[in-house]
Amino acid sequence: MKITYLGHSCIHLDTGKHQLIIDPFLTGNPTAAAAESEIRADYILLTHGHSDHIGDAEIIARRTGAPIIAIVELASYFANAGLQTVGINLGGSLSLPFGSLKWVPALHSSSLHQNGISLYLGVAAGIVLDIEGLRIYHAGDTALFSDMKLIGAQRPIDLAFIPIGDHFTMGPEDALFAAEWVNAKHVVPIHYNTFDLIRQDGEHYVTDLLKKGIQGHALKPGNTLDTAALKL
Image 1 (tube, rainbow, N blue to C red):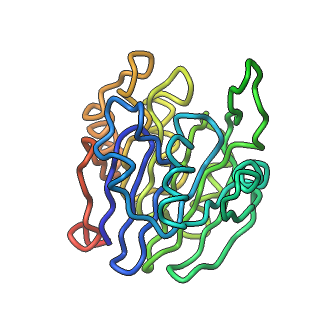
Image 2 (image 1 turned 60 degrees about the vertical axis):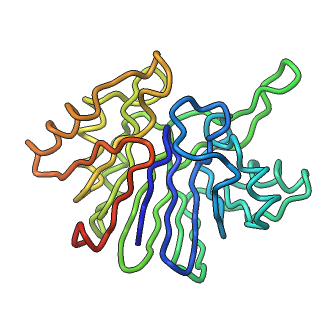
């Protein structure tokens, strides 16, 4: 499986048979490594409703026919726009042809600013994917919280995408605890360096992860991880 970091919190997974994209914020993202028109997707997964996460979800869904899978209120927002959606809630899981998904808690807000007001779009979430024998965790936007320990309790996380930007999410110090608490083998830092407010040193974070026995990968937008090469 090839996993590509497209900038900010956007991840593309390619199993060869199935294409998944998580939080496709590309248009208006100064670090984006692809245009929305280049994205192939069979499924669109969203962690929450902020514009820097749902960005191009609608236009990709209309072009590809891919369903949007998200927390029920966020799914309903897109369903009302005439798109195919699957609503899910925290703790809920879903079996699909490529494997299974589970939405897990995140500590963050979830809304969209429209016509001068904030439209509530349900709770923020993280996503655990069981795919090709691997367990992958996308934390979405979140603060550090102790129940992260439960996410990796039954089975370690093979690859975790964890925000380190600070200000709107946890920063690098808390993200070190998060990596340990979810029992991650490999970690890719996300949600940083897109804007000045969330500027961080991803390489320094990766160095600190290694001191804890965790392999880190400070991917540049457009970089790809091959799970076979990582021996995952």
